[in-house]
Image 1 (tube, rainbow, N blue to C red):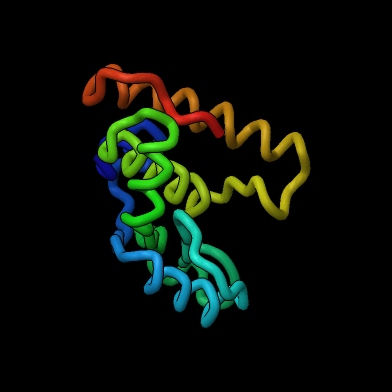
Image 2 (spheres, rainbow, N blue to C red; image 1 turned 135 degrees about the horizontal axis):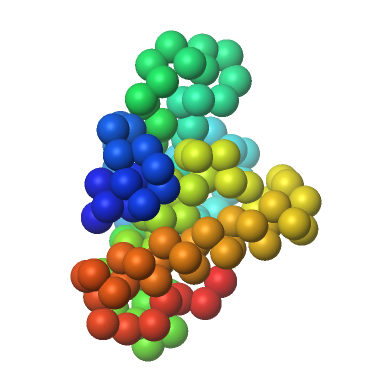
Length: 135
């Protein structure tokens, strides 16, 4: 799925790592690296930002996804766990590609959401049989 998302994003040869953890582990990562002492659904660590960016242009970075949160969110939205997991992976990859809905402008947030919807519709039509999660 990551390969399909990367291809749809125009970077089929990019590399990334994906770590799927529980709520407690993502809380520790969130606290230690982002100074937010709470669990979350997905965290992205971009390798193409800041000092050292560009050393390995094909290496986008790391994505950490909480399976616990994905499972709860999927159940609340009436979606499959797989669908939610793929959506969080897409969301994380878009962050690695420079999209930012948190620190950017409202326009940048809308641009990210539109790109999420576009790519998720593509992968959903190929791999899934349900509607995308609401953002």
